[in-house]
Image (cartoon, rainbow, N blue to C red; front, side, top):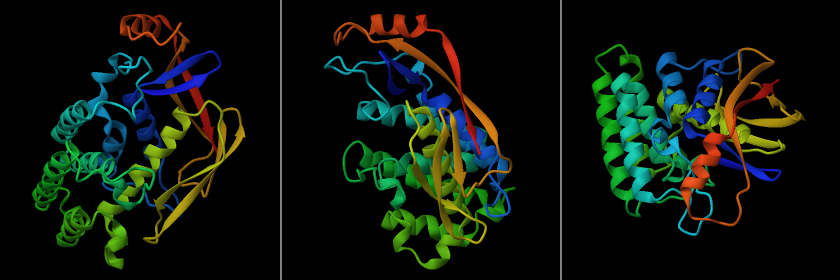
Length: 287
């Protein structure tokens, strides 16, 4: 859950709903400065379902042992590994390339975002993430190798396999040679991170503030930082805009739960309040 304090209560957005918003942003990605996703359907699938593993976990809100609300950044480690593994398998069963990107996203969440999300700590040598990352990175190499003779063959050549191997070895694009910047797989990973962070910003903000999102891949194999500028209570300007239309409006389902008395560890009371709250869509306009 993405939990935001609003007035005298808390607004909840589930991880799958946040991911669906990411997918909506990816589906409108591309213009004269920013390449369209390619392969389009696979990238949009990964963006839409990169948090698929959260589905069962987010059927109910949770409290930590001390009674505080448990948001998406403080889920028990073993549970996180378990449901992310299931989510990756589910996406890969639909589309192998989408499963590859979803797996890269998951490992990046505990590997410093492979150098592009510095706020994320590198836990690649800490259990249980050490074994999770090792297993997933092996899975990623197997996925890419298996794609080379199919319909995604042009996205799974020797250069892409070398970039993925070096990325696993170094943990960051910064230590790769300059040619890696043109890797379609790496650029798709950057695109996924960009729409994920932008969606998190929209879903987790009680009041929108100026920020920057990126690096986002551009048509010239370079990257750009997107400046997000609030223009109103639910309107933001994006400069430069990576989208194929502007303005356009997106929405996300939310539930707002009044603040409960004390820090009761009883989740049943919290669940009852959550499902007793009306589900409402919050809209955002991007210009």
